Amino acid sequence: MRWRTQSACRRPGPSCPRSVEDVERYGKTIEFPCLVKPCQSHLFYDQFKRKMVRVENLDEMLVAYRQAADAGLDVMLQEIIPGDDTHGVNYNAYVWEGQPLVEFTAEKVRNAPPWLGSPRVAISKAIPEVIEPGRAILNAMGFYGYSCSEFKRDARDGVYKLMEVNGRHNLSSLLAVRCGVNFPWLQYQHLVHGETPSARAADTGVYWIDFTRDVGYSAMYWRKERYTLRQYLRPYLRPHVFAIWDRKDPRPFLRRCSHLVRVAFRSAFTALRGPRAKDRVVRQAS
Image 1 (spheres, rainbow, N blue to C red):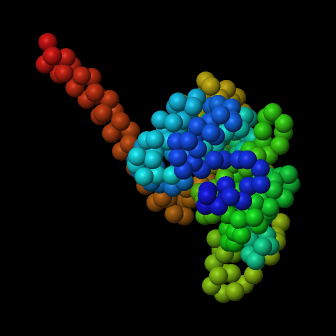
Image 2: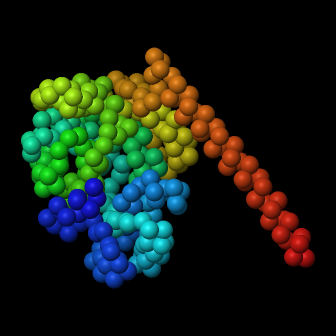
Image 3: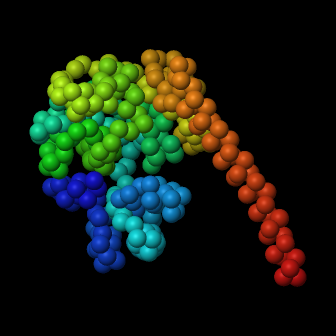
């Protein structure tokens, strides 16, 4: 998908290098810091236990590229667009035969982790500035079906810049469902029963909340994010939908909590073993 996005961009954008020379060439044309992002996120995460690498200079970019290349993984080099979490937006669309049949836009509120992560809170909102650019990139790619295109408003010039196109139903898709645009059901009805979807109005001002990540990252970054209590609580007090929690089916939420507990215990156990292992090495050396 990212290779197709790159080839469809009319202006210079993310670079998908094939060699060290490509990295060096691209590194001389942009401002640092920037990101080294995988073309296959799941494989990159399995190998390096992180979704991307932030690099501060060309040397760090070359190191990150070589590590990925040695693991047989393709990466994309991407400039970091300045602006806080609320500058990020999603353009969701269902396209068929070059026509956007259903569209929905949302704005990010808080990311996990802040500034570079995926949304932990978002809000449905009319964002007309990304409609035409979103349509243009999908048309240039020859894309059909559902997609979530991510843009970010550049704090330097106020222009929305393309981040990436995701050709899949993402976790925050439930926000559109809550707002009256059920993309998974529309796609199912279209592909299985031949019912062509039609444009429909969506509710705005509805929040989507990934509860466990919002609580966790808010606790970790409250000093840096500097949200007031009112700002933190606003999504919970306004119309909203949770990413995972549903009282009719609590099992996914309980499974998420179980996973977090296991990760916490594993991290604590590793932290406790670390100093002891180090002490043993020191004693053996002496």
